[in-house]
Length: 223
Ligand code: C5P
Image (cartoon, rainbow, N blue to C red; front, side, top):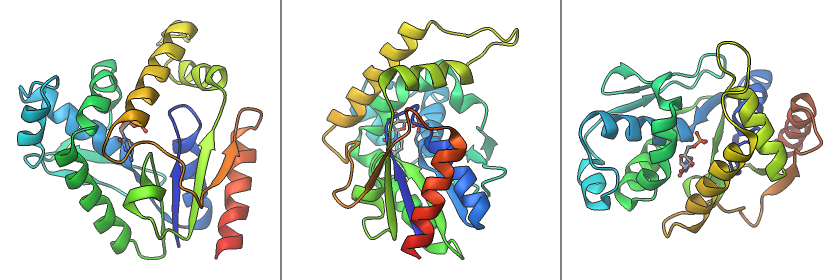
């Protein structure tokens, strides 16, 4: 059972994918974390992330290893745990430019296909191009959407600072999400796009539990 869950940022892809995988005893792969990890490695190793040629030349260098346990997803670059640093604003700001470079996509797509092929019992793979490019023969393809306002509010909720206050202003978060979606949707290689045979689920008015229940039902139907 291979389940592809795609969609823009803030639609609940990660929370939904992990919960569905845990509930159904499937493996889980966060492909955004892989793009973030290679971006983090480049930022740390002096690669100019404004220069697509420099990114292409470095694309094959780091080893990127992803765990597939939905209850404890792990990601490392060259043997160093990257789970925390890949969520920093610096990585988030650079990841769309790095992931638009064809050499990076080729490298990471190969890794994703290998992990999916080796997952015994099935896997939930979340990203932007899983249903269209990485795993076009997935048993189920889901495309999650939500209004721009709902996505920004969710993202701000995740970014709370230590004192519990929102870390960013809502309008700024909405603007940053829109810019990343625009970059991800308009790149030449494997853009963010709903596959023709994907089931679209608008999560704007749904709780996480409702989205999970909806996707679990879709997986059971596809089995
Ligand atoms: O899902 P997440 O927000 O962590 O993804 C970070 C970035 O990684 C995306 O904005 C996009 O640029 C890139 N990405 C991608 N293809 C995927 C998953 C993520 O290009 N399958």
